[in-house]
Image (cartoon, rainbow, N blue to C red):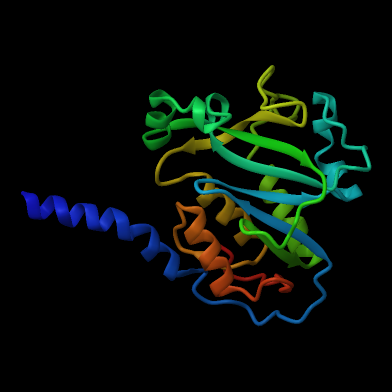
Length: 234
């Protein structure tokens, strides 16, 4: 019995690393060398990843619904729109580590509804740890923005559903998300799926920010790669 428990624990520890070393997709298209004028950032902390989109006119237009929630998208100081998907309870009830409670953690490990978190940001230092700059072609960038927007649940009029009165501060908002959050399908697997829509390769399964970052750097030419692969994205 003890041996089985040890084996199970070893498998749990090794599974995220095993998932990272198998690329997804297995094969990549020979579409390198094209112009890659659009830069995004993958932002990570010890447990979570977000995608920062440039506050360019076309991005602001596609995320224009944020203005109605009070976010000042037209402010020239806004340089990035940071988008992430996560467990609803953990997101809303854990603004800081000091707010950590057993309930949201348990729901995050088992099953929880999801939420989208969007924040506006000024200049971001792209050279520090936890920031991965990635250059995309126009087509790949458009696909990735569409994939990000697919995470928002929508009302009968097709508008994203704001979670009223819940934010970490004046520069972020929460919206209802699509899908169920759990220990297997979490925020970092969502980030990986969105990046694959842009033609990037990731590990097959990346539950941790560290494994996602490692697979991005290992299987892609970063920074400045022309992520224009059009085949086998998923």
